[in-house]
Image 1 (cartoon, rainbow, N blue to C red):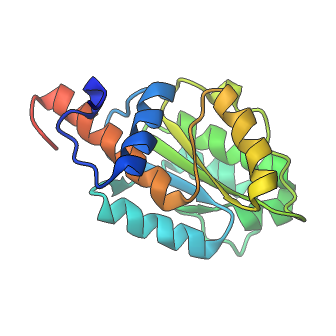
Image 2 (image 1 turned 90 degrees about the vertical axis):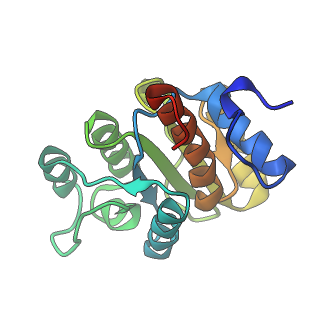
Image 3 (image 1 turned 45 degrees about the vertical axis):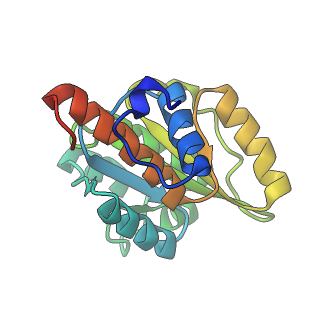
Length: 193
């Protein structure tokens, strides 16, 4: 029997049910469909955007204030928008500064209802996954830990201990977020979204 928050939200298989339930257990409900994506590759940003549209969500338009903050840590040639490609900011400002500035900006942006963050768990990736606890509870943040399974396991363990659900891909995280959005809108409007 699915958790009450999943009633009325169709899932394709047991794996999707478990992934959606994990999002509901760990994170607050989103206020709407406006989704921000942070990925460490441009291709991942494109796949994330495609998944947002496929799942019936909306790609959030970032506020002017958020874009101003992000411009401080990214190269002048980098065109900023949502999805946010993390890599140019890593090259310009270092991994920890880039990650924290971007996530903080999205968390504080009123035009963003939910966030999906993807990071590569692989040798040579410069980000030592930072402490995310300071971002907990403000809006739903789902994480995709992609890459090396062994290295990824350490990151998943730490993040899930802090209350951030982890998924194997940005697409799976977005699919889980879409279940939260449908439920939230159903609660707000009394109907299925």
